[in-house]
Image 1 (spheres, one colour):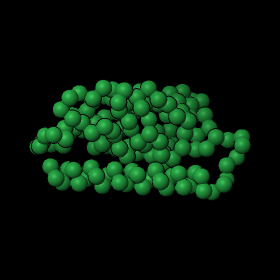
Image 2 (cartoon, one colour):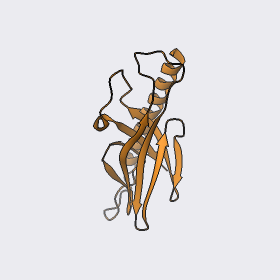
Image 3 (tube, one colour):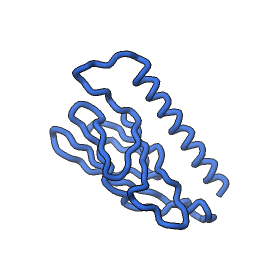
Image 4 (cartoon, helix red, strand yellow):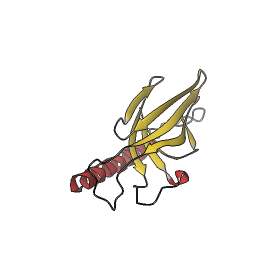
Length: 139
């Protein structure tokens, strides 16, 4: 269980570092164009939220498919898994896909999506779906 907590803490610290690097890159370069929206590299979405990741491409977090992660108050034999349902919409249509903490990377329509973190951590009580936040890196 201690190893699981350490791994979770390392994963969160890596996510924070990526968010900081993305913010520095987005605001520190001064290379924005008034006609094109900025490309999102790391984003945190709630269920039902959408974000433009590139011109004409929208990423939507539409549901939590499953969450069997071990509650923080419990010692588990298996750490569990969380799986999220997402959709990429563009000029060519929509493509639904999933990301999970055990299969965190997926390439969809030429874009790479990596699940960095899912919050909140599970507790003994159920997590309401609207409380979930997914931090995703887009390459």
